[in-house]
Length: 232
Length: 232
DNA sequence: CTACGATCCGTACCATAGTACGGAGTCAAG
DNA sequence: CTTGACTCCGTACTATGGTACGGATCGTAG
Image (cartoon, rainbow over all chains, first blue to last red; front, side, top):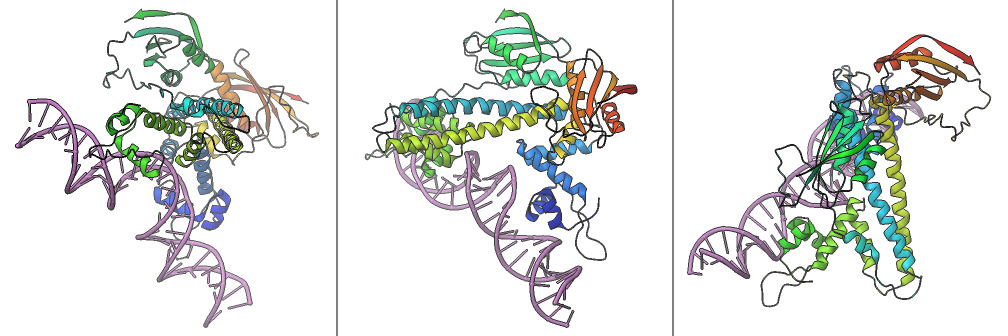
């Protein structure tokens, strides 16, 4: 924990001096006190580690706000680890969704490139077609009672129940819920660690059961047997 | 291409009216002319499609500037076909780069999630440890056979085996493995839920056995007795 | 002891991607 | 023919994540 000047700390952490000050203003790191006998503030290796933490978390896609929460959790000895875990799981799901879309984009670009012989007039560009498509209904945020789905409009919904093995805590259940919510056609999800199951309200026309099973399986859990349908 | 008011177009495209105007100001979409006999501008389905394109591309991670380029590329029906083609290729490379980055992010997040026990009021949340780490020495990714360790270089490695109590599923085993992998000097880890043990390949000069035991204990598992050494 | 660099601190500015507001004009139903 | 909703337009404001600037202070080398 030997002290160093702010510019040395900045170099050590791989950021600029201004960035350190910015983090101090944001409250992400606490500013060392000035020595009472005057002079410059002294930064120790703990601060450097904290900055590195911040940058690493940012790389992964956390915002400074989220990092603030993460750091607060760390500072709280009682804090529940599942909080941290579920935040990370949420981020991962976001990242996975982006990868899927980018792959679709890559395919579209490949098609465009293939369609163009390299000379002459270019016919139909498939980029716009691909991206201008109906854009995903996107009706998540469900189950919580309060936010009622005005999506219903007479469409017949269906509730299916999966028995799931491999969830060993509430955090796993939350992970599964988050995964399912990202699937198309899924209108509501309730996952119970205690009952070892997931109850999913779907639009039978858009949701693909196989995709749901697959998603859960890919996350390392096992979906058992047939689901119990309950037309609604 | 039937006309509609701006608010209908906004609804159709899933954005706000202000957003359409913003895109118009940015030059992403051209503002329809006002009817010469006065009245409101009329938006057609082409505009809606264009806005959807923009939003989809944004979701994927393109900035509005990049989308401008993409749209210019698309809206260039004749032009230089080879020019168009090479622009598409450039974009594709960018897309591939983004996919790579996102995959790295996903890996990082997976490591974090795997490393976090996910339950319990753990003071020792490994996510935070992992993130604060020196910016990646990264000598993990072991055991899987395929990815051979070229670390060997004649250094004498040692395998130690810990008997561990308290792992109640495969996920726990993965947690323990992840925990151990973050320790210095650890070159390989195999944790078996079935055998209730961990086999750890270490560099005896850098790894501290006590630290390993400690890490496991802090995560809520119990390390039994002496490890069985196996000089190698 | 003076000059040069580094630090301290506040404020201002940058890009990105919108959102909000206020006042005027316009349309269409009651 | 009035009222309420919608449109038009410019300007201003939001949040995120920094960067830059300018003046004052500080510390050390020559």
